[in-house]
Image (cartoon, rainbow, N blue to C red; front, side, top):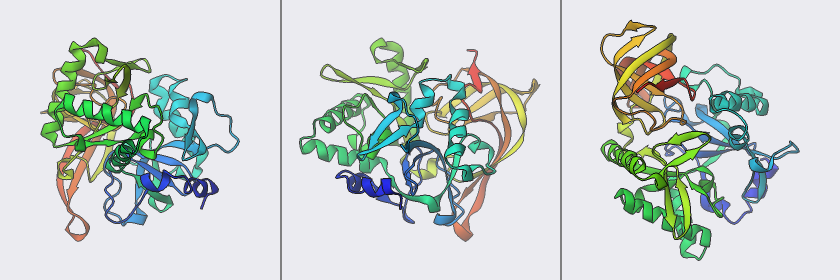
Length: 369
């Protein structure tokens, strides 16, 4: 085992936040996993080769935190995790580069860190790392992290108390039980002292999440003080919350409380061609999840009319919630064939087959209306 992990295991928070992986582990979006080399990777989406046995699977993910081992690290990219010095790859790139280069440059760093990750990947994982599950020691589940922070708040931890109060205020604002909130981001791995932004994970039915997201659109449209601008971008479903005079940026992820409602929990993706796409969003019910899925009408592919409606899949988290019903979408992507499945093992059968347009990078598409 890596010496950095051995040191972290002695930290008083490690055993609280770290959970080993077993056959009952749910593979959800926006969860941190710890590899045996000491790197922390962040899951993307819900489909991580569910047709394979646990140790044969690969996690579709991003490498976010890398142990400092003599490399030059700028102050804004430094992070201390369970007492050990780390480099935050995300901060290092987002603070210095345009958003449309974020995912490509991340991938370049991944392959420098671990050349064995340079493997053939499905189209939706173009800018992701396919991390072997046999290299992963455990993970940091959303609800477990929030419970531990709330517990520490009761024990007198002031930073934990401020998070609890902010989350309780947000639960009241959105009209949902506080138990529906989990935590992601660096807070989920125990680094929550004096936080500025809270990467919360809100669990709900698809109908409930649609209602919450539509409420957030209205809230941020009407109340300027709630609006979030970061990295040169307006984030319509992020919002500010206050604890006294102190404010927190809420960056919500949304998770399917019933995984059977997840459209791409088990699927394959086959590329047909690169394509220019244009269409109008007629259903944004799943636009706040990662992957974000919308239905388009009045579609053209490479300037030619497409018969019927077409799904648009954004397989990255950088534009969650950005596109809504009525928006006219234009850009480029992959014309793909999607096959979804239900069941497991010998009872796994195909559920749907449909064409879609897939995008994997911020800026692949935009809106004209």
